[in-house]
Length: 272
Image (cartoon, rainbow, N blue to C red; front, side, top):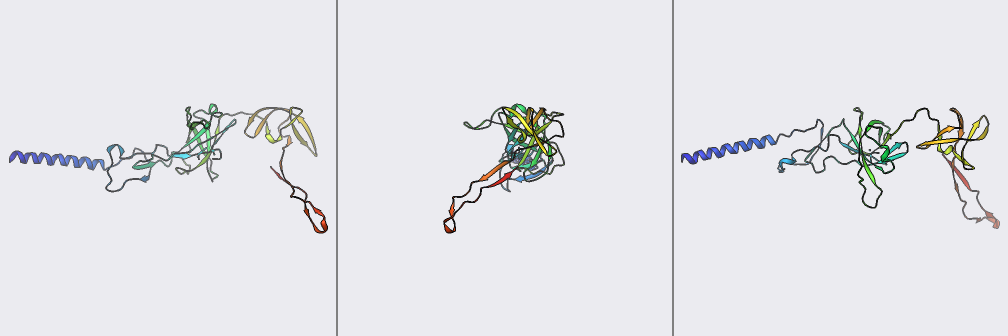
């Protein structure tokens, strides 16, 4: 009987140790100082030891496209380029999701033509979709393995890290971003619409006083919608830019009173 009693005590001690271990496991400690964004477990649920708490990332993701943090339709790059991307949800399937409200990243994608212009550390400006807020950021990672499916244009993942701690952003929101891939000083540029091709050479219409004269110019690099002028113009010169005109064709002639034909004049709507 003494041996049986001793075995019972040892079994009870083991049960106490196990209960204390379970109690310790019930105290969850986040690896991040942030905000609990989602709790995907309920009282009575059982989880494995490996799935106690998961953070989506130390930086909650936002999304981006050219037009659009969908991130970056995307990210416009200079000189010449754009990126677009989509942000992912933090820790899909995690039991508890913790986000850091003062540390953000933008996950985007860039095409093959723009990839060589991007490097880590380049400065960027992020604009959440639907706002006029401009937030400072830097290129954090540039992927070299395409993510697009077979048969589609190759797209490469790019991650931007927001460096403005005072920015008011929201996890999962969309945004546009512009990456500065190069800086050129003392450059004279004009809108691309101001460049005309005359006899195979680039020209501009320079306005002086009330007269307009055609001036031959030497062009250089293109920066978005602006063209570098190497010679032919001086700072302060005024040039004329083309306007696209949309002409609405007249309707079919209609017979008016007395058999006369009524044919309205075509209308033109100039647009910038």
